[in-house]
Each structure stands twice: as structure tokens, then as C-alpha cells.
Amino acid sequence: MKLFPETIEQIKLCDWLMAQTDLPFYHFPLEGKRSLANASILKRMGMKSGVSDLFIPRKSGIYSGLWVELKVGKNKPTPMQSAFLDKMIKEGYMAVCVWGSEAAIEFIKTFYEMD
Image 1: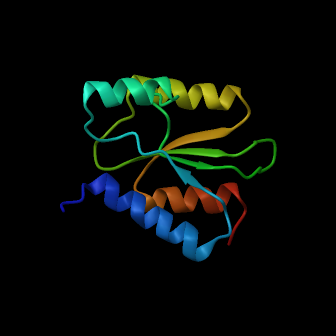
Image 2: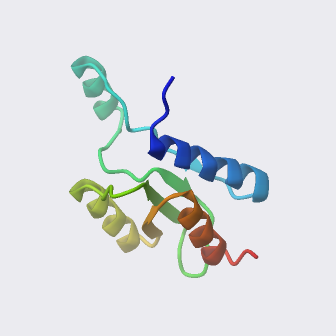
Image 3: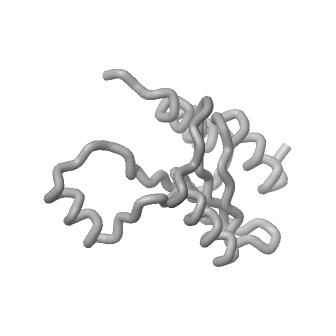
């Protein structure tokens, strides 16, 4: 099975979170091909386009938690992803788009005041 670059970076980030932190986190697997029927069911179940890749539900400072949209290379967030990040900030969360697992790790370390 061929892994896409963004998948590899997501795995690196989650491996680091599991091995080096006690932070709870959740990945939202919105990518992938689906039949129209399955897509319709998932939409009715609450799946929404634009939701960020990773959520860490731990407070830091004034923020209720952290949403992370992970990109690689020259990829950019879609308009729906940008709108989601903006909405989460308005709801009291930190929400960022970062390029690569290393940038995500550095942001998380800073945000949660880790070494």
C-alpha cells in the first residue's frame, strides 16, 4: 500500500505524540474515496468537510484546546479548512495550519510549554 506524503507526516506526528507526550489527541479521517450513498450517510452522521486533521483537547492558557491542519510541500488549506480554523479560533481554541510533522511538533511544544 502506497502512503501519501501527508499520511506519512501525520503518522510521524502521532507517533511522537504517543511516545513523547501524555496529550490526548484525535485524528479525523476525512480523506478518501466514498460511494455517494456512503458519503450521504456520513454527512448525516455529522461528518463535515474542512475539519482539521488533529484535535488535542487540552487547555493551554486562554485556549480550550488545539486544532492542527497538517500540510506538506506546496499544499495549501482549502477555503473550507481555512473557514474551519477561523471558526475554531472564534470558539476559543487555538487552530493552526502547519507544514510537516516537525513544524507541528515544534508548535505543540511551544503551545503546551514543553521542553
